[in-house]
Image 1 (cartoon, one colour):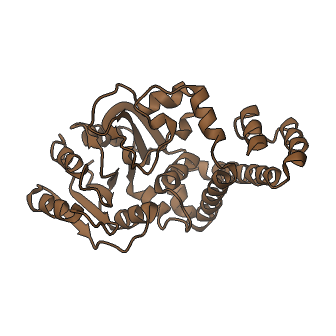
Image 2 (cartoon, rainbow, N blue to C red; image 1 turned 180 degrees about the horizontal axis):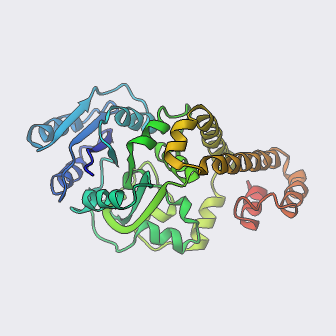
Image 3 (cartoon, rainbow, N blue to C red; image 1 turned 120 degrees about the vertical axis):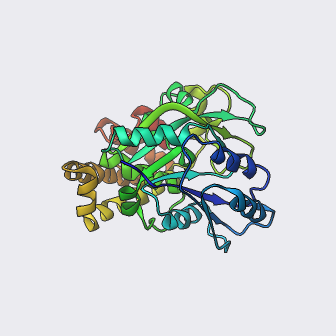
Length: 321
């Protein structure tokens, strides 16, 4: 079975690193059929670089109208809305793909027709693409985090049915990739490809800088301390936004969801509602004053209220927030 392959790229003031990423598209052992780029109002030479690339690329390149500024997630949404492919790759502007990336994921999609979203491992590297030997998936495992936490847009490819289900994005979404992966995860149609298929450039201006993305080995303590320093209420609010939107989407587009996930849809709906209730309960704990929170949080822990999360580790986070 043949696939029409699209790449959806979002750019913004990317002139420094964009050429390397574009060149890596040309070296693919299986070329894409199209590249669709939406620029978020760049003020540097990004658009000129894209136009010069379009003039020489052996596949179709469509550059959507630049600006106004929409932000990271909505910029990607515009690019994804415009692609025409059956298998869609997401691309940042500052990485570099290995030549076999498209071919490996295309082959995986043929071997696993039930999977709707694929994510490959990536090597975290420095600004000049200096190799580190440290991969993001290995760091995640070293930190003791569940593999469902492995969410990286630039390492993601998805099929048309899941994209149709996921569009439009819920308003207020902080990250496009979290929404796509949550849709695939809860429907049971997500697969991790452990092969490293690209370099993940870290340069200080990245949209995501969580510890497992560092080009150094990361341990459990470092990640836990970074988690403690975050804003728990904001994080829970974003999780709640995504899951409540997903619960509504499953009801509105049940036929499409059933086509994607089969009989798992009912079980997914139940699990999502359970998770939503657990998130609301945690937000209630966090809404109390710190002295009252100790007793309320401990009582919630003893009643199993943190079983949906990381147990005592999540309890400590809520007490310290």
